[in-house]
Image 1 (spheres, rainbow, N blue to C red):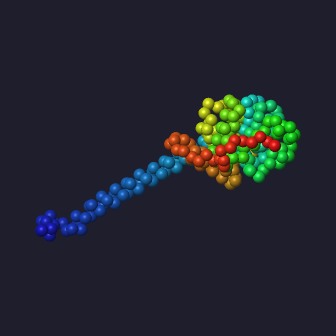
Image 2 (image 1 turned 90 degrees about the vertical axis):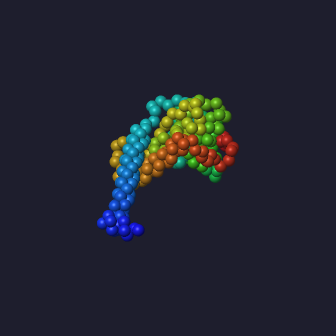
Image 3 (image 1 turned 45 degrees about the vertical axis):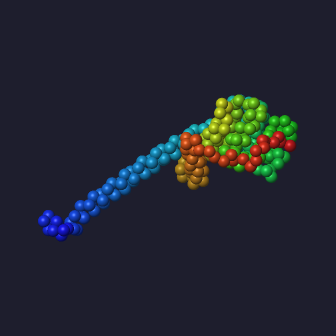
Length: 237
């Protein structure tokens, strides 16, 4: 029956298949082209977002005369802690939390490294030893803020780390005012940081982490507490 049909139309079975095959190939090409343009569009958006993030980080500058109820420094280098202790000494805040201190690090070691008098640490410095990441810093700080009833907090961390730190701190501490005090390790405004592999890597990594944290908040996803225990910060001894 099929042979009779093809004989009447003057087409063989291959002739019937060719238009269908061409249409199938055409649809596949259209789909591939659409996916390519979509990926290209997303890559362009990502590049624009990264450049905006880098420009925001490069523009961060410490306030001239910072004043807050208290100060929190997120560990990651003694330069941050030195700056935070200097702010405490100058009266920028009434008390200092050093968040994310390694359990084996003593207050005496920190005090000596910052060349601070013992009475300053005894009266006005708390060591938070529970935070293991930035989310943990935020949650550790939240407990400290609640315990002391603070409303304004001066935040000390590296400039490239500041956007994600503020995002996590504000998420964990709604209603609290955070003032950024960035520690500038490298001047991104006056140097070509795109040619510095170490700086570029640090900014790319922070941008990726910041993007994930932003997406997590937008989706309402939960994350680990980032804390070793549920205990609060300990006073310096």
